[in-house]
Image (cartoon, each protein chain N blue to C red):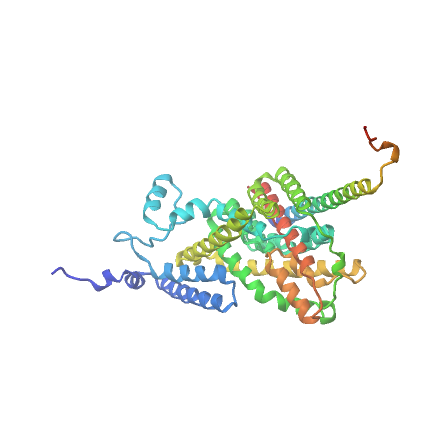
Length: 61
Length: 401
C-alpha cells in the first residue's frame, strides 16, 4: 500500500514538474515572439519615417 | 556415404520437435503474426514503414532457430542480452544483425536518429500559432502517461518498469525506447514492441474514440485561417535554438533527444538542402526500417513468453486510451474557454504520434465539415506533445535512475 501511495505521490510530482516546465516554455515562446515582432515593427516604422530636411547631406561643389 | 539425419539438415523443424510445447506454440503463433503484420502493413491497416520489416523479422527469427551447440538452441540474428565484453565480441562476429543492435539500438542512437528525422519534417511554425493552448492540450494528453504509472505499480511492476510502460501513453516510439533502455533494460524489448504495435494501431483506433466522445457538429467546428501568423526562418530557428538550450539545461538526461529533435528543426529552417534531403530521406527511413526490423527480430518466443508481457499489453492499451481521452478533454476545455471557436478534435493531436494523430484529427474534422481546416493547430498540439513527452521521460529518468 505504501509503495502504491508513493507512486501516486511521484506521479503528482512528475506532472507538476512537467506542467511547470512546459508552460514556462510556452510563455517564453510567446514573450519572445512579442519582443521579436515589436522590434521588427519598430525597425520598419523607423525606416518609413522621413528624415528631417536639415539632416540631409548638403551638395558639395 | 555418411549417415544423413534429415532433422539435422532442417534444424528449424528439429528445434521445434525438440522444444517445450509452449515454445513450439509461441513460435508458430509468432510466425503467423509476423505474416499477418506484413499483410496488414501492405494493406495500410497498420503502419507499413514499421510493420513490414517487423513482420518479416518476426516470422524469420521464429522459424530460424537452430542448434548453436549440441544442447543450446538459438539464432544467428542477434543476442539482445549479450553485455559481457568477451561474449559481446564473440556475438558481434557471429550474429549478422548484432552490430546494428549493439551500436545503434541498445544505446538509443536509433531513437535519436528517428527524432532528428521527425525534426526535419516538422514545421515549428505550427506550434508558434498558439503555444499556450497547444501546450495545455499536450499536457492533458499526457494523462495516460501519468495515470498508468500508479496503475502499473498497483499491478505489481516496480517504479522503473511502471514508468517505462507508462511512457506508451505519450505515443512516441523513440521516447519509449529511450526510457525503457534507461530504466528497465530487462523489459525494454517487450515494452518497445508493445509501444510500436499500439502506435501503429492508433491510426485505426483513435477515430472511433473521437466519434464516441465528440458529437458531429463539434467535430466540424471551422477555424479561422486568418489567425495563423507567418514566421520567418530566422524566427523559427531562434525559437528552436532557445528551446533546445533551455530544455538541455533543465533536463540533461534527455539532452540527446532534445538535441536531435531541435537539430532537425534548425536544419530544416536553415535551408541547407543537402542536409535536409539526407536527414529526411536516408537517415529517417533508414533508421525506421532498421528499427522495425530489430523489433521483429527481437520478438523471439522466449522473450514474448515473459509473464509480464500480458500485463504490458494491458497497460500499454490503458495508457494510450487514457491519453486519448485526456487530449479530448483538453480540446473541450479550450473549446469552452475560447468562446466555442476551437475545434475540440484538435485535442487528440496532443497525443504526440507525429504526424499521425494530427492527420487523424484533420480527417475527422473534414468528414464532419468539408470546409474545416484544423491541421495547422493540430500540428501545433502534436509538436507540443513531443516536447511534453520528452519532459516527462526526462523527469522519470532523472528521478528513478
